[in-house]
Amino acid sequence: MFSSYVLVFQTADPVFVAPPPPHEEPAMNKPRARLCKLEKSSQSEEFGFNLHAEKGRGHFIGTVDQGGIGDRAGLRMGQRIVGVNGVLVYPNTPHKEVVAQIKRSPLRTTLLVASEEVDRWYKDNGAEYSFDYVEEETSSTHNQISPHYVPTYQPQRQEPSQPAQVSPPSNGSSLNGYPTSSDS
Image (tube, rainbow, N blue to C red; front, side):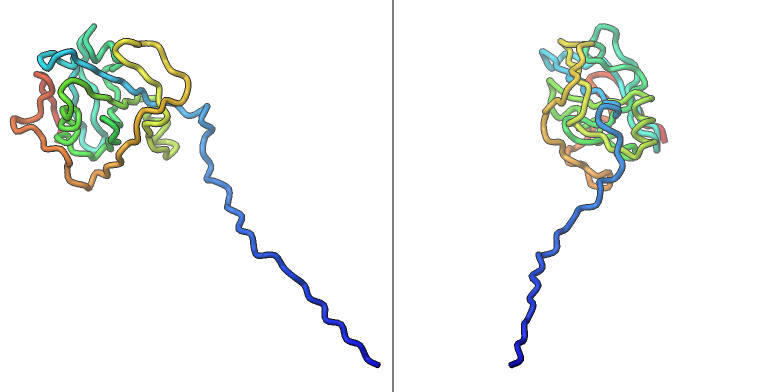
């Protein structure tokens, strides 16, 4: 008698193994942009800084009034504005959009700013700024840096090619009595 055996091999379903994540600096080595919270007690007060835009380079903090709200919040001349009130700001974001975003709330604004050194690191490493990884400063806690994750709010990503969501001021670019400038 002839016997036959059938061998059945059962294979498991294929398992997908994700590729390793792209090389990114460990968070501990990644510099933080500074989150500055500016708050006025009345609409007649000024934030105490001016800003200017340099075509292709971005939007920068200009003069900061010594002892003013901006100074106490940690703003320094030359910092690049990389976010306003939860919206990231890019070098080619129109100046009027940045001013309108700052003026959105008459009593408070939150600016994400980067020093020249921090900005250079982000550019050299192709990193994107985030409102989730910041060095936090407020008018009342100047020079007290929070070394941990700061849950603020979910940023709204606004690509530069999108039209402004906030109407720019009709009398040109001024910010609380300070002129703003946009280099051509």
